[in-house]
Image 1 (cartoon, rainbow, N blue to C red):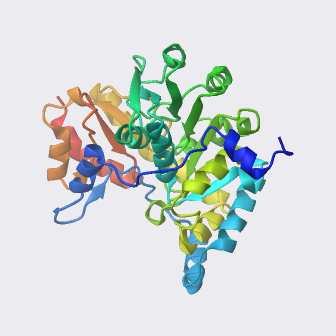
Image 2 (image 1 turned 120 degrees about the vertical axis):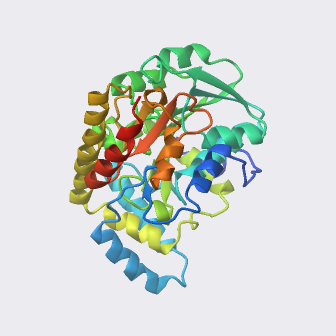
Length: 373
């Protein structure tokens, strides 16, 4: 493989194609954005799955320092961060592409399949960005129902693969259901997917997994030429407002993605790149975030258990709960209490509650109790 020229790499890549679109309509996203508007008084945001503690102090210092060079493009910073990521994952810098959030990677992959008029196979419900971009650019979408525990059923996904399938999307842990796959089962599944079908594994919440980053499938990219892994600094690392994420794959796929990425790996800018690099050097901060997240989550689950409400076992920083346990439209009622929670259009029977600080979750529990059926 190393003897192939860069041009031949791209030609052989599953991602080698050209044009792209840059916009998509999303009723789910628009609904969440609108829910943040026109509220008086203190607003408790439990709807975006944000980290309420970040950025870390090291990240803040790096961000402030980087701003003195904001008149320059982040070329050298990008290279340094990719070197650091390569060390973390025992890979090479050529295996990474930096983007303004992992949603950029998902949009590129969705458009790639859409422009080929191919089929995207996805467990459902799941994170919709890749699906929306694929659908609007011409892809057909095949949704595979989750099991009764709101978990991804890999056997069903495997059975649904056809000669039309161009890409399989797996969000693990899954958003919005908060559940995760057994690491061994996922790894075994990935090895059975035909080599001409791309697989995107979105690991946005991997740091919150009960297995931690050990459950990542990143190490398989040197073995599986059709695997792309998406990661982000938006969640556990607390950099959602700075927009930085990355794709991990083989050199051919990364080259192909970079060649059609409108930002040329510069879209994140100096501040987010510097902040991301610094936060990787602060494992104590990440440990604190994960530990406090479990504290906040247990406050809610203990109350839900007491009230007999149904919810999925969460491996994330949010809880997916049955809305039938409340005698009113609980999303609207929480808005009246200046607390924002989420209900996507496709979540007909569930709500999603992001985990804030423990005192914020106590506030939520106190407010929501009066509406328990």
